Image (tube, rainbow, N blue to C red; front, side, top):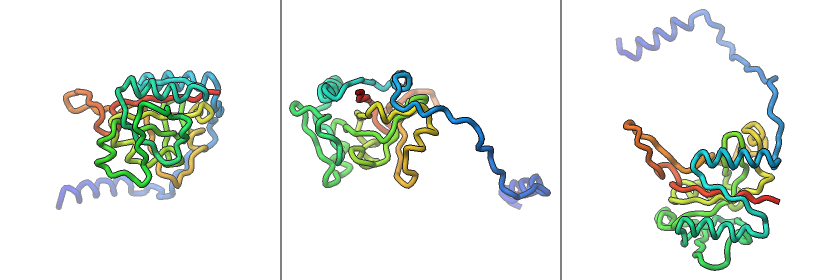
Length: 209
């Protein structure tokens, strides 16, 4: 008898006589209020992202391009990928080479760029999470994984208090990428390594007003 047979036999013995009917979980719990875009929600979102070593900038519509330029310059980024559908008014008009992902760039071209600027579908304040679903301005999943640096622009009215509220704003049929800070991995020797599973550096611009 193989080890697999032994384990499965023990599982069957433990489950003998157990009602096979599926257990229905309680759904009568209270959800947090959907405080979308509230000042306290934005403040918590900024605080939680900062705790993940993301750099957060707050900007108005009038100075969004200036804020983006300053954030990219601070990182030394010049050749930057722009997904299809990103609002050009968010981008500075000089000092950068904007690389359009239309037609789709090869993985080599993406890796050779300095970074990427994208939008986001929704932000979650209590976990400091950005959710990208491939919508306009967000681009393909590879654009949020391969570049070494990423800057995400999100309007304040897309930042919700908690994950249940975020799920209500999302289409479950779309491919979703959840981003909570820059990529960080700790190996067996507890050595922290950045950039293994995504951008090593993350900037977030919250567009207020």
